Structures are given as C-alpha cells and as structure tokens.
Image (cartoon, rainbow, N blue to C red; front, side, top):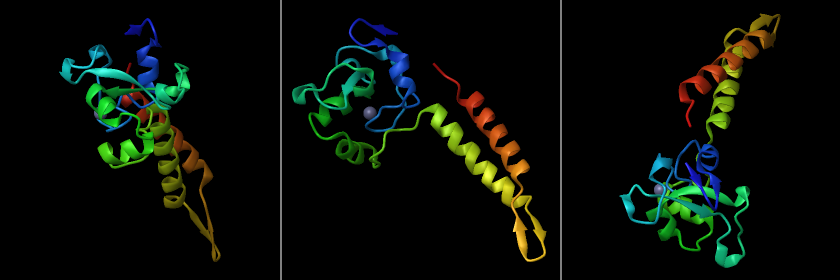
Length: 147
Ligand SMILES: [Zn+2]
C-alpha cells in the first residue's frame, strides 16, 4: 500500500508490528483511507507531533493508527493518548524489537538453567545463552514475519 503523501505504509506499519500505535490493536494497512471509509477499521497516518504544532511528514514523525483512535487523540500528547486507549504509554513493539527481547530473555534463562557450579561460584553458561537467545530470536522473527 503506497500513499502519495506518505510513501510505503507497510514501512510505517512495520515500526509498530502493524499495530495501531495508540490502542495497540492490530490494523490492516489495506484499509488505509479517509476516516470512516472502512468503518472503525479504517487506517490513517498519525503525526506524533501534530501538524498543528509544526509536525511534518518525516518518517520518524509518522505512525499508523485507527481513524477513530487518531481523531479521539486530537492533539493530545502521544503518551497520554496511548495510556487512555491502550493502557500503555509506549508504542507497540515492532517485530524486530520483540524478537530481540524474546531472544535475550531466552538466552539469559538458558544461561542460568545450564549454569555450572564451581565451588561456591555459579558459572553462567554463555554458550547456551547465546545459542538459545539466537534460536528463539530467529524463531520468533520467522513466526511473526509480516508485511
Ligand atoms: Zn487504535
């Protein structure tokens, strides 16, 4: 889906794992259009810094949001709107960030699980940690590959 004004919408959507950056629910880039065009599933491009406050069309200032979330937000600061609609002040994680976090989590877990005791010292198993972290990252990336 390419917008004349914003360019590739998949690229913008990928930054939040194709979720509305305000409520965190999944959205479908194909339903991009004028507010109301596809009912409440209509997807719009939201400006992190509202245009009314000088926000421009630079990629860093753009995120996808449901038309309804977008218009309810108005010119509220993003963090405030996200807490109101999604209960969390952070944007949804991109697929990449989620994979990395899962991998690091699995790695630390595996490293501790396979840790060896040497005298009264516990030796963190770096090899297991790296292996599991890398594997789980890849797996999670592959499972959630999209757009
Ligand atoms: Zn939304």
